[in-house]
Each structure stands twice: as structure tokens, then as C-alpha cells.
Length: 627
Image (cartoon, rainbow, N blue to C red; front, side, top):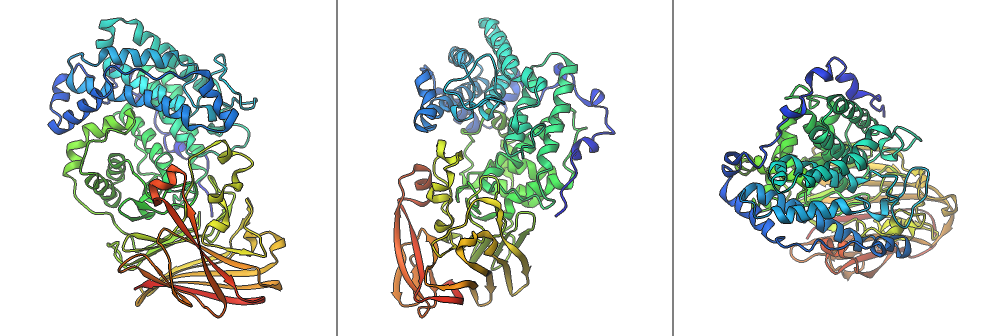
């Protein structure tokens, strides 16, 4: 698959003179500052009331302390959640207070905002312990305040403070100009100066051959916002824009032309969506003259989201993703509108309606502001998700199919080929999902709450990463290993009115010790009569009975007869297997992790279909059909 050449955005903008199109800072007014009362008071009453109530929850905020020992827990025990929860609470509180003050405009929240700004400026590091690794040095227990690191959350914090300054500087200066002066000094020292001066942060992709990820547009969006809003020197603002374009080009160069995100759909919200954050900032800061929405790859990256939509809040969740996803409804709607793609806009509008059209109190401030001023339009928007009948993304070898376009009713199949060196990789070549009427039947477990182990050399000791806990075979006791060399071969996909099919050879995804000569997996969705068929035709170097097919389900399985398993309540589905070849057993996986329990509840079930006798060749067939 041919990849887009580096410099794609830079070439498209080569005919523009950035110095001529970039608005000077005094002319850049993306949203009304708080002192422009008429704009804020014209917002819908229910929106204003909800945002003010959200800020009132943080009046008198104690700004939870962040002692050094909390920071050190990550290197001591691997726990990252304790410190992160307290740090993120500070930032959520400040954002809520800022918006509430903008909505009300009476000064009631300013003292708490002042305390919040000051507390955050006093922090030694705006990032999180898991990211405290400077270029050229290993991970350290505490941050080095003399060498600022730009990570995801240092960027998020700088963006939050930059927007706070933009919205409320006159009101805060009336208390004392030292608050915003300190804010600007800290953003400049911790973010703007290293962003312009250094090329060695791995997420930039400018040195060391690192493949960039969602960090690239996510960090860039906040660096760009801080430069546009706070940098007084127009030449340095131009430098920040030019560098942002260079970095985004590195991000786009990792994508195939189909726009598929191998980090998974969950990460689209901070990959493709953060790309849109950047492009939207550039569009606004140039009065619309920097418009990259016509770039084909940008459009395909946007469309990836609805191509992976199953039903409601269920999305394909290969890699480190949850099966249930809260998408940024307003951003998705605006992205679709900018692309002139009614499907993407409709997906955002439908997600907004599904949330009872409640104002988005949880969004970070850079996304909450456009959502606030787009609220009336989004609330009036109509349209349903497109529910595409067939999807094929050859770059990441992901297919999806449903019985009929335009409806979540009936059977749905998603499957992947790919390799085991993907970003946020699970060892899952050949994995598939089956849903019925928008409800999960056979699933991918997703990922537990991140710890130090998640991104360490011991990652694949975690059960959720292992092929034995995906809908895959284990052969002679061997699972799929990690590494790009372990991949699907001879991958083909086809779709007709009658069926959709993905076929591949899984043999290269297993180690030589597994003794697999070939393992051709064919996954089909038959549309009439409706059923999903899974065929595994294999040849081994030597006969063995050590063959097990694992299937994960959130539905309590009922082994009602040899060859038949019931999944789910009425109407539910039937899973048929070949009892002459396979014996069925059920293992219950009690879920202790909060992240998994939010999706699946208290437990998942692992169906184990085990070979009854020693074989060298065989063909196993499973069928899933409505009851």
C-alpha cells in the first residue's frame, strides 16, 4: 500500500505566504472573551445554567495536594492512577470554574480561578509520572524542573491556561496582573520555548526514527493554541505554525490512504480528532485561508470513525480500545461539516441526541468552547448514523459488514488481519467480533486500566493482550507472539449483496514451534439467510490434539446440546460447532478492573473449543445465527 509522501500539508500550503494569511494576535478572536457579555448571555438558557452549576461544584475548591511520594508511586509500584486522578481533578475544576465565570460574568468564581491558576503554576511538572522520561535519559522518580518535558498533559495544561488567559485576563488583571503574568511565564518556559527550540521529543517524529502516534497531533494542538493565543511576537507565532505543519506531516505519513487508525477507534478521539483540532485552529487563525479539509487523506481519517461504528456507543475495539466509546459529539459534527460529509456530521448529531442533548461538561476546555458556541446548531441538527453495509480498510486490514445498510438490526461482523507490531498492539491477528441487533455476542475484551506494566517489556503477560484471550486458536500450547513479523498472509476481502468475506492465512502469526503449515481463516457474513460463518482450515507439521479455539463473550453461555451453545437472552443467538471434532467448555473471567467493568459488567466468559483427537489436518466451522 503506497503511503502519502512526507510534507503533504506543507506542499499544499506552499503557495500561501503564512506571514500574509496568519492573523496577528490582537486580531485573532476565536471566541468572545468573557467581557463581551452579549455573546455569552445570548447562549441557550439551559446551557448557561448547566455550565454555571458545573462551576458551582468547585467553589471553595481545596486544590488537592500533589506530594512527591504520590508522583513516585509509578516507579515504586507501577500505579499511575492515584496521581493522575488528583492532577486531572485540578484541571477539570479550573475548566469548570472558567466557563462558569464566562457564563455568569459576576466575578463569583474569580478567586477560585486565581487559586487554581496559582496551584497549577506551582506544580513541578504539568505532565504525569508515566511520561517523566526526558530524551537521552531514562524514566526518573521525580521531574527535573530544569529540563521541561512536553508530554500529553503538559500540553493539555498549557492549552487550558492559554484559553483561561484569553477569556479572563482583564477580570484577573483587575485582581492583580501578577496572576496572568505568572501564567504566561510558565507556559512560555515549560511549553513554547522547548516546542520551538527542540526537535528531540519522540512524538515529534523529527529525530531517531520514531514512528509517531496520537501524541503527535494531541501535543501539537495544545502547543499551537498556546502560541496563537499567548505569543506576542508574530515571527515566533509563524515559526510555531510552520513547525506544527511539519509535525502533522509526520503524523499523516504514518497513515495509509484509507485513513485507518491502527491505534484503534478509541484513540481516534486523540488521533484523527486532534488532527482536526489543529486544522480548526489554523483555519480560524487565518480567517479561513488555511483550509486543509479538501486534502483526501484528512477526509479519510475523519470517516474512519463511522466506518468503525457498530451501534449506539459500541465501536470496533481492536488494539487498546474499549468497546463502548464516548465520542466528542460536537467535534465529530463540526469535522463532518467541514468535510461536507453528512455521514460524519450525522454521527456527531446522533451522539449528541443520545446524551439527552446535555451540555458537554466533561470536555476539556479547548473542545468545550467550540461546543458551547455550536450548541444551538448541534441541538437542532438531524440525521442518523450511516450504518454502512460494508467496510474494508486495506491499510490496516480491517473489514466490517452488516446485514443491511442504514440499520443496526441483524448480524454484524468485524475482523482484522494485520500484524502484531501495531501501535497499542494486542496479539490478535485474525480476531473478529460478532454483534446482533447492536448487542455484543463475541467480543474483544479491550484493555485494563493502564499501569507501568502496560507499556513495558512485560506487556504481553497481561491477559487482555494475549491471543488466547481473543477469538483465536492456540496451537500446541503456543499463542501468537508480538512483533511486526507475526502477521496475516494472503489476505483478501470481498463483499456482494449476498455476503461479505475476509480470508487470510494465520500461520505466519504464530512461532515455528507451533508447527503450523497453514491455517486459513475465512470469516463470512451471509445476508440471506442471516448467519456468521467462521472457517478454520489447517495443516500442521505433525498430528496433535493440543488445539484450542478461544471465544470471548459477555453473554452467559448455555451448552444446551452437543454442538449448540446459546448466547444471550431472548431472542439471542445460537453458536453451532462440530461436536465430532470439538469439545466445549466454559471458563468464567471475573473482572476486577474498573475500566473493563464499565464496559462488560462483572464478568466475561471464555468458550474453549478443544480438539477431541489428534489431527494433522482439519477444517473447523462455526456458525452464529439468530435464535
